[in-house]
Length: 259
Image (cartoon, rainbow, N blue to C red; front, side, top):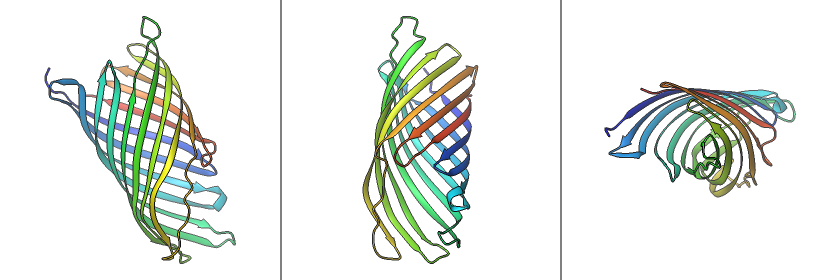
């Protein structure tokens, strides 16, 4: 079979509530994917994107905004044995904020940063009935990330310098779904754990601060995917709970066109 090239423009809209933080994200990404040689199960792709976000910190009577550019590459494997994805992603971002401190003085700051992520996910669908409409899909995933090169001075004089923060995240989830030729609906539940690796950061050129990470993240969600010809629409709603995430909700909608 001849090689196939696919181009996917995607537009996502996310609405999230995290603690007392209200956040709105607009994200656009573009993907090019190609079958590798004559191996129908294996595809490689590259992607580029941009995300702009605005935040409102109710407990600090302030707000902030960020702009993030990202790009990367991936390999995808699809077969009767299961579905696997390996992703490399690089991001470059700018963030600024203005909040009130405990005595009511306004503090503002802005900084640039970069991050690198490598992630792997593998899952497999099992069909308990012969018609193969109802399925169960367990999956595992692991990711490694680094945040680099943050050097900023806030309006109150606090200087923060972060050379590197490294984290590992592992976890898994299970989907229970029902699919037809055009429609796929599902519910899912999962758990993940973040591990903090090496850190190198200073406050006012001295001292170190213990970084808190999530002891465990529990995720619940539901979604649907609808396909008609070369067009696809997806919708997913997710809730996450952990020692750092309280009442975190995220809704995403996506559109995909293949040609």
